[in-house]
Amino acid sequence: MYGSIIIGGGIAGLQAAIQLGRYKHDILVIDSNYGRSTLCKNYHNILGWPDGVSGETLRELGRRHAEKYGVHFSKDKVIQCMKQDGSIKIETETGKIYHTKTILLATGVMDRLPDIPNIKSCLGLTVYVCPDCDGYEVSDKSVLVLGAGKAGANMALTLTYWTKDIVYINHEESDIEDSLKGKLTESNIAYKHETISEVITENDSTFKGVKLKNGEMLYADRGFIAFGGNKVYSDLAEQLGVKLMENRHVQVDPRTKETSVSNVWASGDIVAHSEQSTIAMGEGAQAAIWIHKRLLGQK
Image 1 (cartoon, rainbow, N blue to C red):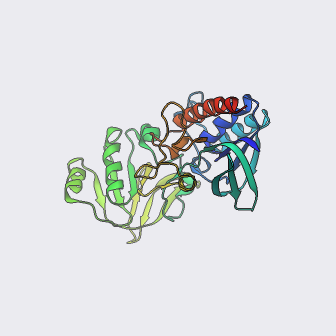
Image 2: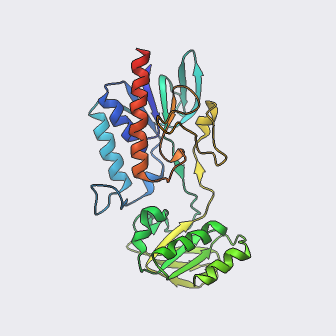
Image 3: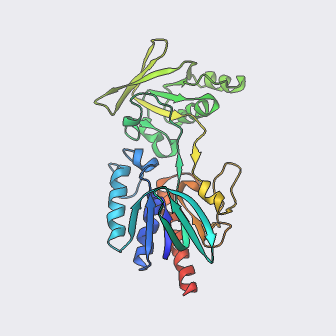
């Protein structure tokens, strides 16, 4: 019987683990080692890392930090959660069964990435996902927006705050309304209704452009992706009866980060917020503080 089990070892989950470990609770983190932070090669907007830091580095440092306080880790995937006899029962893909008094869901969101060769090696370095995180990185540079439909069009329009040299490639050739096309034209954004066959790179991680299926080559300094349809990993929350929003993000108490189900918390990108790593850290710590209060009350 654990005091708390954290599902997800990304930014939010690790920060919560550190905080709960410092409270000397018996904590287990179950993590499949696949998420946004495993793909991002460089976060540029985190306090204390002026030259950027990779998700891999943050995860490694965070795990070592938490283990100093006795936090346990298991590389596994949770497939089922259910309330049972005053506790929460958790079953994993490898067949392990755990019981816990409280649970923190930090399962996150994954961006929809079409299978375009060479794209993943550039993520966070020269190809970006979030304009709030990395719009600054394309200041006055030429940019190709690799996207689909209105999601890609809106990303291209957002980036005009930082640069005016933008081409939007509608990779999936999905329809966009005429009014949105008009906005692209008004903003001098070139529009390509073509499929991308591959990303052109230099030294694997430096984005140089794309090759289209029709053979055309487009070159630029940086890339942005916006395909829409991101996956919100809220299935476990749904199993527990947690209230979800229409977009499948988890609703939480803004003060405590507890969900609509008692003893079930959520933090990070699974919750409705700006999907920033720094916010995920804060939410993880905030949830941990209130989990600690609940565990004290149960004693």
